[in-house]
Length: 318
Length: 251
Picture 1: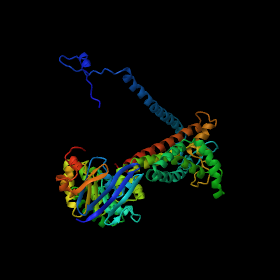
Picture 2: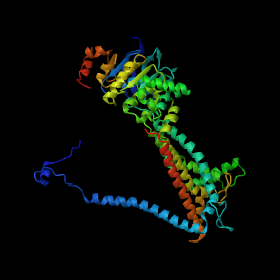
Picture 3: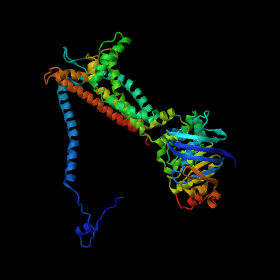
């Protein structure tokens, strides 16, 4: 028990007002109390300033680019051919490539991630959970370039056994591996959301004669829904932004297609391609990577807003 | 009064802790039996053996016999979910699901296969009436169950338990988180409910046991010290330890 201390000796020393026995002067406030808030603010400001810097750079370069290429043409053009004449900047092929990868990745990652989260949170004995969760987190730390080679040298040959007509570079293999990469994220975040559902809600359902599966699907998942949606959207934007795997395994042929067996190019892979080449600063190709980057930024930004909206709309408070 | 629940030589261990020691007890049908005793004496543990909620705690081991209406509920033929449908439970903290009032009550019946809207409506109304909550919530059944007061939430939980048509209602310190007026309402409610249900309640409040129960069992360190008609146990206990406890000398 800590009681407010008013030692008599100090009280006497601190006597100020006539007749007052107590002093409430702060006697231990040091320099650190004044300096630290400023220091902490500066640290926080670093990331804010970086964000502002990125947005400003993106905006100015994108602005220059759109003075050459009309924004409407950029957004609706069906041909992306920045290097080989006739030069054409229509982002739809890159967008479709990115979406193809992302959709495949989500089809792989969301069901598997969610199912493993349900297993871990509702079924697994605590000994299993203690082993599996750290392993998942290790999986999340594997460098993406390793995943890229995993796609190219293991998954693609396996897939070509099934689809012999498929090329070495294709959307399917890259998409599956991006999916595998984001499983730990979906699983870990959903599991956190489910574990946060109070024990008492589960007990209430068990006491009514619910089975484990019924408790999991009809109490825990709905109660954790906002967290689950958040994890899915985060996974989605992670897949959109994924770069190395698609650069290595999906190819570099911008193509407006929904066929996962074909070679495609994603927005991120295009940025890599141009950045690695010796594109002169200020040229149209140079500007195009900022326009593509801006498009990526806007998409993930909108997704985050969507995630917040959905999470709020479907929240079950407990 | 006819016995509904018969417990004989029941021992329960949580890993290495011997939580219930040789408990034997007969609980009468359509009456209120109260378990009293200091914290950690095993009264809640015994309550939770009656709907097998202890099964979910790893390392729990049970020996002895617990029959309900003559059936040993720990035998292999017993389906736990069916058992829990017959033995409802209300917990210490009100734990409504984060759904509407209607969906809270309908949760159990839906679980057990009732889909018909009209039938569900009837069950919701009759359960809420039985829990003395209907008049207060009938105009906003679609509202979140978390928007009503704690006392109303607890009566909602009672209604939710009644909606699956149990025979027995277990109340685990169901009023300890409530204010005196809500507590009084629930105590009055139990007097109504005992005409139709067998009620077993754990309470840390001796006065509550004396006010509402027909029989009382006094627990100490995992043993049943004394089990008698409530009136007799409080006015003329036969064990010295019971007398010490009810007169407030410990606990």
